[in-house]
Every structure is written in C-alpha cells, then in structure tokens.
Length: 382
Image (cartoon, rainbow, N blue to C red; front, side, top):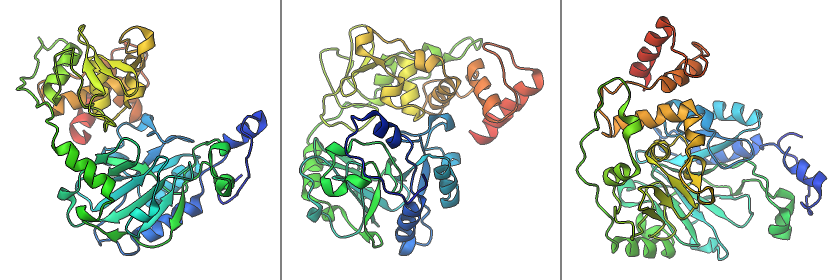
C-alpha cells in the first residue's frame, strides 16, 4: 500500500480495519505538492524546518534527540526518504524564519476567519492549518486558546501534509472518511504575508487577555557545583527548575506550564514534597525529568510519571541514555550547572552509540580511545 492510495474505512471497531489503518503509509506526492506551494513565492533565503516524526504519530522521533537541534533539520529529499520508511514529517516556525502557522481546531472551526493562503486539512478532517509568511516575526507570538486552536510560529510545529496518523473514521465528517487520518493540501496557493492584525480575532483577543496576566519571573540562580567526581545534573531538584525558569514555589498556587502552551493559565504547580505537577497531562516531574522535557528530547507526557502511579518515578528517563545526555546539555547551556561540569557516564554511552563508536554495556567504563573521542564530539558538535 503506497502513497496516493485511498481506502474507505467506516467501522474501526472491526479488528481487521484497525489493522489496515495501522499499515497505511504517508503520501509522498501529497508532501511534494505541499512543498511546491510552500516554496513557490517564499523569500529566497527561506529553508523550511522539516524534521522527523514517529511513524503513525504526531510526536517527534525521539531516538534522534531534540527536533530543535540543527543537526535534525531535514532537507526536502531527506524528509522524503524518511517518509518512504513510514515516518511522518513535522514543519516548524522558528524565531528566525518568516513562517507563521495558524492552527484552527475545535468544534467551531471557521475557515472563513483565515486570510486566504496555503492551507492543510488535518487528520480529523475538521482542523485547518494556515501557512503564512511575515516580515514582523517579533510582533507575532505563539498564542494558544482553550478550544479554537493556536498560532504557532516560534519553536512550535504542526504535522506536514502527506503524513498519516490513525483516526477513527466514525469521528470524521462523511465526505472526508476516505482520507481519515491524513494531512492533505486544501487550498493550493503559496503562503500569503500577514501582520499581527491579520490574525483571526479569536487569537488577537486571547493575546490581549494574556498580556493582562502577570507571569512569575525567574529568580536569580547560581550554577550548582560538585566535587567534580559526578555531575551536578543529578542534584537539580524540581524547585530549582521552577526558580530558574519562572514559576510559583508556593504549593497552594497554580500557574502556566513551563513545558508547553497552556490552555488555561493554571495547569502547573509544585507539590509540598517538591515535585512539579502538570495538570494538563496529569503527570509529575522531578528535576531530572523536567530538564529532559525542557531539552526537547521528550514531551511532558513521555518524561512524566502518571499521577496514578503515586509519585515521580523517572523510569522512562533514567532508562534512556539520550535523556541523560540532553538533560545534561540543557542544564549546562542554561546555567543550572557549571560549563566544566563532568559529563555523566550514561550520557557518554549515548554519544558513543549514536555516533557508531562503541556499544557499551550498562555502567561500563568506556575504553580510553572511545572516551577521548566522545569528549571531542561533544565539544565539536554540541
């Protein structure tokens, strides 16, 4: 079953049809069509920030590390090769590029509120992604709303056209059931140019409301030091993250989440035991888990411990060498730990494996030549 094939699916309660849905592949020709319109009248220096999403998923492929890292940015040909393997593609608006995405979602999607532009219909077949360029990126922020979607333009992404995420056709309007789960080009035209005032009114009003809310300010912070026999990464607590990033240390107060856009302004808190709570995803984080999320290596849900589990048990994080490395790198680059903080052994294992140098066993000390090469790679590439 290759790209470009339609299969009507009307009863996902049927086991066979569920299995078929889970074998459907991305549509590469659809992606090429999207890319063609995106670049048709784009600024000469614009290069889309494409990156890998997992197969049948909207989530980044975490085995490659943070999708925000330049090394994970894909050319169009690299993106196509990933889709041939069954993976999906994300496209992000970054702070230094002109792309703005307006994501209309929810029960009251009004496409007419969008200034005409290149649009993509989402997997639900009701959501619409409008792609724009702007000369005033500094004037257009990321804007989440409770039910109507988001403006995503600075370090946020949407799923690119041609990607596929299994979706129950019974939840999709009848006229779109043969394409349930797919992201497809809706309005075939180049992105138009916008300013803040061109955004749909719902986003402008939400932004004005947000401006009236006083966000907690980060406190002064001095890096944690150790005796250099081990990394200070493992001494960082959740309350340290709150102090450094901005949040309320008072357990009785809730505030806007540090990790993702807030659909309310009260979906995070610090417990009396010093554990960070995300009430949007119902998970908890200790210091290490929080740093992994801030690094972009894992999402809030992936790194967090479910509330029903009775506490913060960071198994998903401590069992992943990549999580240790990216948490350490984020902590070092953002002043949590000194620049000369020693890299954890598990983080070195990650680099050794990722770069094809060596496959160490758990807690194994690396051979001297591997150890030196890992340090060189970290210095040169990270």
